[in-house]
Length: 354
Ligand code: NAI
Ligand code: MG
Image 1 (cartoon, rainbow, N blue to C red):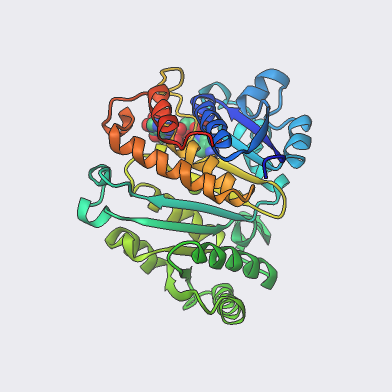
Image 2 (image 1 turned 90 degrees about the horizontal axis):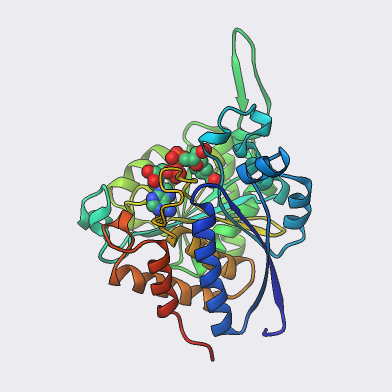
């Protein structure tokens, strides 16, 4: 594999976005040297940075570049400077359009409590300790996109709709992920009340029986799942769920590790995947050199695993992050390292070039 060059579209964005992205690119570069991988990074202005440059958060040249890339690495967008713009020219609209443009229908959000950092969790340490779960959220269907959808003075209507194909493909993503983890999938729905959820459950069961009998599947109602996530998060491995439930449960689960700065995400479709930390542009930290780069570094690791088929390099990055966190984490985690010093520690913990 040492003759392939991976083309990565890099969208640093705004606020702390450029800080955490440049940290992740250094780590990718070093992992590339250790594993004989070559990258071509094309840096593109996106979000507020693009509004300043050309008046639009998601310019046509970025559209073309991301579609032709092997993967997309994004920092974060937005900030007070652009908050007053009309909706169609806002940074958030650019981000939604980017996801739609790439057709990324599955959103993967791993939630892990690192050893020694349990004390940061808002949950009791003994409850949080050892949490290691993955939320697989359907991202392009369900009630966020269902038609009809409208408001009149007398009623408001949204429609929750899933096709068999939409549920099958997200179920497959979850079962495949479970095979690389501890082999368990929990499908979360509201099948006791909603027809669309009963349909979801039936389709997930069908995919399980026909293709993934080696994976353990169970089902939870979403209200119970929310309760179980805070009562005993360790019981979960892979959670697969519809767009709306996944939006809520993934934000709920994101507070378990104690800092937003730790959390990575991957959004996958049939084309290039989109990899970004869960946090925003943190204008309060911009330019201070203290942003936690872990979420972005782990997003880059997910990119290696899910889009570039380089699972070994991905695991090496994850292990190096863990080592660096155990030595001395970033200031948001009660440690003493800034972005730069922490990144150096990750680089040092990576295997050396062969
Ligand atoms: P935020 O995630 O930027 O910040 C929330 C809190 O977490 C802040 O106290 C911040 O300092 C802290 N934090 C976030 N990332 C951190 C990191 N890497 N290291 C250490 N601490 C970190 O969310 P907020 O404040 O609601 O939004 C700020 C801006 O970001 C807004 O303009 C918002 O629209 C945008 N945003 C963008 C997102 C994206 O690009 N995907 C997602 C969420 C918000
Ligand atoms: Mg959300």
